Image 1 (cartoon, rainbow, N blue to C red):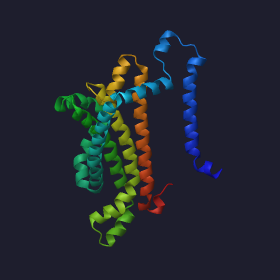
Image 2: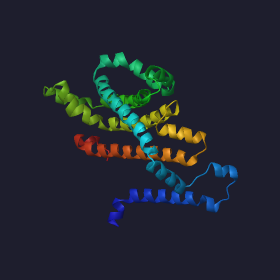
Image 3: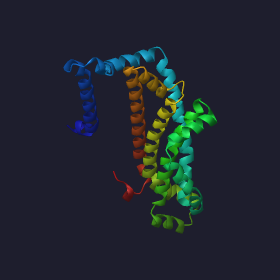
Image 4: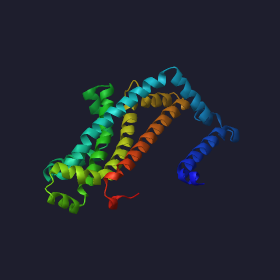
Amino acid sequence: MRGYREREPFILGAAVIVLLIALWEAVPSLVTLSRGMALFFTTPSKVAATFWRMLVNGELNRHLYVSGLEFVVGLGLAILVGLPLGLLMGRSKTLDALLDPYVNALNATPRLVFLPLLILWFGLGIWSKIMIVFAGAVFPLLINTYVGVRNVNRVLIDVVRSFCASERQIMRIVVVPNSVPYIVAGLRLAIGRAMLGVVVGEFFGAPEGLGHVIAEAASNYVVDKVFVGVLIFMGMSLVLTMSVKKIESNLTRWRPEETKTF
């Protein structure tokens, strides 16, 4: 029972997933589908067979590599820009006053409107997709980091400053550790926006990638292929989100005890 309690969330979650897959597989046996419904319906076994066929013939590897490269480079650029810029804007009133109007305006603008410009500037190759991923991911991380810095307890900063700490030491000892929950929340949002950027970018004019696979399969009514692409995106998002949560739990030792929530 102790082992079950420790793994209860995982066991219950896995049981629900298995149950849903079993019900999905059993639908054709339980319900008589019309010809129209049968055309747009599939089962997990057919999706698994399509996934295996695409994996064996190398088609999936090629598209997965392109989408993965767009995601990693776009999200990496968003982290390199958004994280330090959020920290600097949170600590500098001058920089905040200069950049805040532009950040708010760009964040409020739907990313999709940038796609035609990005295609014109960077072409139909991979860089236009990387930049739409970057545009989608950078603002959640930047804004959450900024809010985390602005919400750091001023008493802690004053105490460290009273010991003649430099701005770099204040950032390392107080600001960054206390901003970790906000940074992690921003990173989780950025992952979702980056995935959305990959899909949207590949829907429009991309010759390769999982988004291209989904769009092409949907236009040809190949439902199995559509589900393969969708499930891969879901699996990638789940793994990355769980990884970020694991990183957050490892970083909690940096934070003061009164700020911990778990």
